[in-house]
Image (cartoon, rainbow, N blue to C red; front, side, top):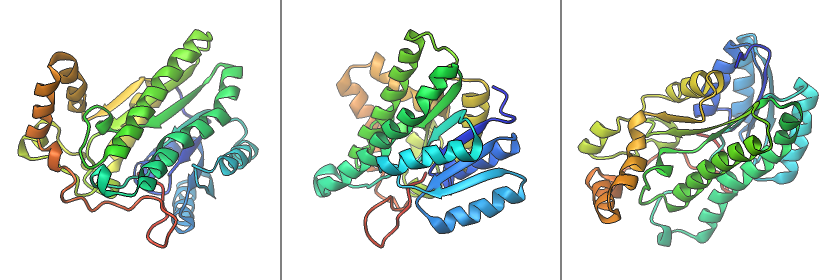
Amino acid sequence: MNLQGKNAVVTGGAMGIGLAVCRRLVREGCGVTIWDLSQKDLEAVDKELKAMGGRVFTHVCDVSDKKQVRELAERARADMGRVDILINNAGFVRHGMFWEQPVENAVRTMDVNVNALFYSIHEFLPEMLERNSGHIVNVSSGVAMSSAPGLAAYTTSKWAVWGLTDVLRLEVMTAGKNGVKFTSVHPGNILTGMFEGFSLNLLGRLLVPPVKDHDIIAKGIVEKGLKKQRPLVVIPWTVRLGVILRGLLPNFIQTRLALLVGLGGCVKNYKGRIGYIHSNEDTRQTK
């Protein structure tokens, strides 16, 4: 896909992967609408990207609020014209063993990481189907390929994101709309931001090296996902080992290998950003 002149909506776009993607899209000549929960971060991003010459529109949005998504989807069309690209990047995470957390954390995780995608895709997909062109990118995770103890709800949500992306791709192909593309993105452990402190042991880090910064993932999204229209972007590629081994090995061996590389203690030193909650802690949906 030639990105010059295309218009994109990016959720959770005021920091992390989302911001890195927005920078790259602006450099490619795209118009960009950014949704995020932090007004302060949106103001900073708006200033930065417009200084780069970008055509940028920023809006505070809780992506799990269906009414807000609907209203801001209309606003995006009014601001930019048609929307060619939707990048669902906003995310929520709580770490800790499932039984040690209030169940509301798990529900909130699914609301932001899964239900929000239903809302945004349902808004933009019909018009893409009508013109038989468009691209939807859903940011899943490496834990969709290798489950991570201490991240039960997050892992569940990212399996769902991968499954949703896969089935929608098949549905649009069944409908004969091959011009509408879907990409699922599976980042490994990023050293900064939302998953700072998440880590495997030495063996695990040798097999699946941590990702230095968010722009590495953003580059994969733009260069591989959008430009080359690949259905799957996995960084680093060794994240795929989780799926390969699950298909080749008996479950009890695969499980022991997961613990051998340190997945059992992966959140022991976790200190990443707090996700979205209704309190004064931190009200950001981002990656």
